[in-house]
Length: 102
Image 1 (tube, helix red, strand yellow):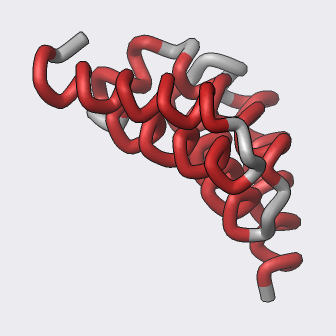
Image 2 (cartoon, helix red, strand yellow; image 1 turned 180 degrees about the vertical axis):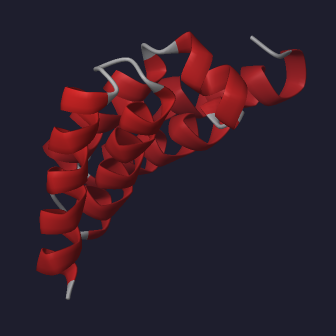
């Protein structure tokens, strides 16, 4: 079932990149979904790469209002791979964003 979901998301990403462009909000949201699925599949490096793409797109972050969520997910991925420094860095970013909007 999960393999089918990954296949579907990768196909959606391909089509969206071709039709909407690399920086379209729907394209970026597909990266976000791939990040969540990759995290659940314990493909942590893939998850981090997908989440990083989302963080580079300001329009996506503004419209979806999920910067805090991405920081939390990245912090938990770093925790899973044992990178305490990065885990705390992204937990702090999440905290700062929630508290101060930065």
